Image 1 (tube, helix red, strand yellow):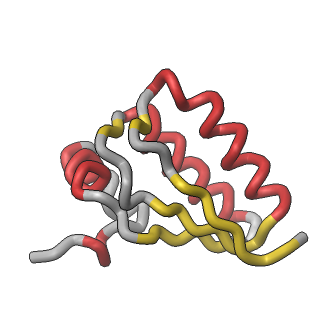
Image 2: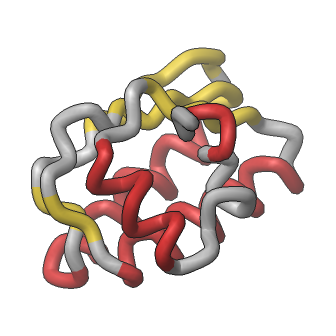
Length: 97
């Protein structure tokens, strides 16, 4: 199992892309101990994608893996805040006051 791996989130993280995103996340979790979610290009996201990532982060923690965000877009931050998922998604440090 290798350490670092980067997953570039698509411009549209929406329900129609959740299945393929799940497959990518699952594969990364099986093969890597440290995973970075590159989310600066996300322009649209929805509940389904953020719930998937929430569960992914929980599963990674339980396995002793680490997931970090790299430059989450305003879209990701805004939707996560509206859904009350900033803490479960570990995005609080990316919020600017």
